[in-house]
Picture 1 (tube, rainbow, N blue to C red):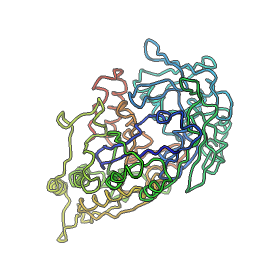
Picture 2 (cartoon, one colour; picture 1 turned 180 degrees about the vertical axis):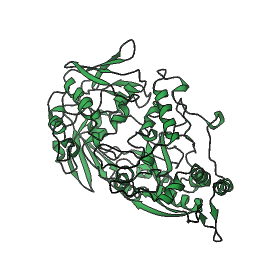
Picture 3 (tube, rainbow, N blue to C red; picture 1 turned 90 degrees about the horizontal axis):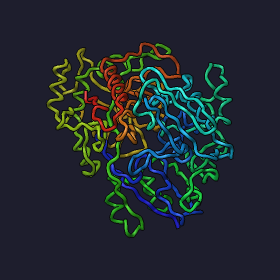
Picture 4 (spheres, rainbow, N blue to C red; picture 1 turned 45 degrees about the vertical axis):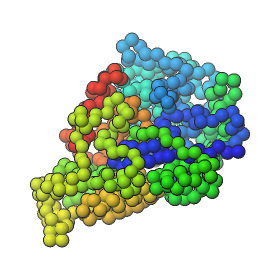
Length: 543
């Protein structure tokens, strides 16, 4: 008999609030029992994976959570760090060196030994390789340089930091170890453009059974637009207190279902074992909870960012074409324009109309449960709904309204832009429509597949305004994780994405003074070694 679990997830746009069952860092094994052995669990994934190559992946929709592990893990309840592939780690007295000791007898999913050589290869030749476009290098940057790693023996590796760096071990947690015996040749071989062949390795056209992993599961099949199937990794190291191999559940099936409406139908028909519940569906599902033999769990608020962002990039592509129309770029790069948009959005109306009043509004990139959270009463600048103030700011900045009450810029150009939103989440589309109405500005909706959106945000950079989200699981504990998004050099600094390895050159990329200030604040916070110190994170992003 399948275990049916239903999770309740209520997301308030621009407010970082949600309810869910699986908290960041929770292991699937925590939710299983020995009685499940021999069974399978059917889950949902909103989009096809873009690659089976973890270091170059940039989409949240992937099977990597189930097939890879790093040196350490995070306890999903206490948020404390725990041993994973490494059984222990120790710091030098000056906190400049960290030695990790691997568990004895570790193996890859193909049965090959996993040793310190794999750890050194993963960091030195992949994550720290400037020719490989991986977001994980952002986490390893310390000031303007990077750590080094060396093998001490088959089970011990030492990381040498250029200076003490508080987030380092927590960042190590999210970096999976990769198999040197399967990937070393591709890293060291270059293609005709001089890029490592590794970049194009393990695409979604690769036979899943050829993907070597070290986590609780391994890939066995993939049918685009349908499903990804995983089986229990027989070489996985973890065992329960009685010595039984884990995980207990033999198979995971990740059904690829883009539409949240279709996800609901498939769950109600018994084809899915879990579902994240939107506010729209909550009332119906709660009424049927007993008859449907499922349970709705409230997992509490989850860290994350829901936002409206403008493309501030003033650069040009390799053909000399601006990423953003210069007329529109001038609007977007105006602080007054962005502040007016913030005041014009009625977030309470969005919460009540789309999210049925569930959840709560929040004004910071950091979740309220974070020890580093700055509340409005303590000085955080907020942008509560105030359309008259929005209009006043625009008029003072030189904008004007014509007889038809259309907004014009300084030169008489009508203000009009495109709102980009992903197609797989109806609530976010509805949110974009509300924002469209609130702004009182001509804004055309562009609804696209999420993988297409990622390419526009991070590669072609040809977008104007995006109603999006940024997952920051664990940011309640380590705020420096947000540098991936906010730092001018961050791989997800999408509102002003700079040059990236392996991409065509761009011309005229500029970093603003306020972006540089944020860079310096993150650097200062990371140098504070006391995790309990409020000074770890004091940047005000409300500007």
